[in-house]
Image 1: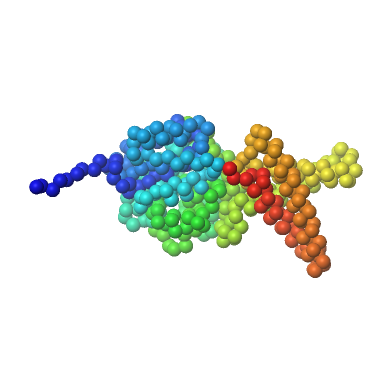
Image 2: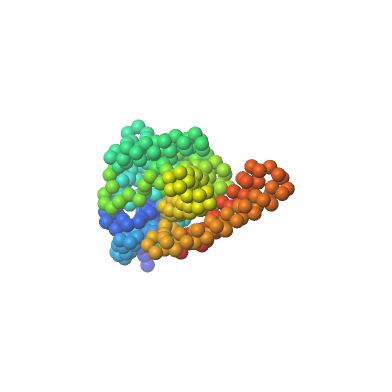
Length: 373
């Protein structure tokens, strides 16, 4: 009897490439992206892993409906977790393909570059990056003048502070051998947006990197999730990397907000004394409440943007933050006084108390005010 030969459809082959696409409210863009990938990656065994942060526009439902008809489409719906970096990490770690790519769903990244990136990996590269800043690349009309300036400044900082040699470490469009990500997954930050910089700075052994030019396109539909606060998150990531990861990104942002609260406190104190004409005690109380409110609003917008409180939860969160900070003040004074008893140097005691208060406020507010869902 002749041996039976079975022909496996291309779509059912184990994928060589997983394209990880983090989404939030991208229901209009994902179907277009899948169609574009089908054309660009013809002849390649590929899949798309859409990691959706529980979009309110039903993105996950749209993707799952597509997945029911196309085995190349997969969806990971994250509930109670948000953040582009964390979504990218989960998507890459969920892949069994030897090569993974990361790109946005907004169609600003040129999918036609993927075959060249894949060929570079096949030819021995560990990482292929779509770059706006090598010859032939461009930011195009996809970035405002302010965001373009911020991106270029952040690139210079990354090169100087971390010794990263990429022309575009801020790029969100890259392809890498999955084993490289697996090796450093535990060291990567789940917060923020700049996952490429984090990966490159975490991998210690030399890598063969290829940068390919592309033009950053305008968004197809929906609104950008990147705002001016991303710059602060990026700086937090840089300082965290400089510290060797000892100081988490979120704590650094919390501390920076606290520092700005000191300025808010002083301004409010002088306003109450000079403009409102209050006595010192009431002016100090006004300044304390102003600084705590300032810190809460800024932390809610920046430090805990992935757990941002809205509606009635915003006000209940404010009350718990007042409570946490009040206890933190007691801890600050208590520790400072205790240290001063052993080493009567005021600035050492004061600094120790301030650090203790900041650590307590950060830990307690993470659990009580912005607790994970």
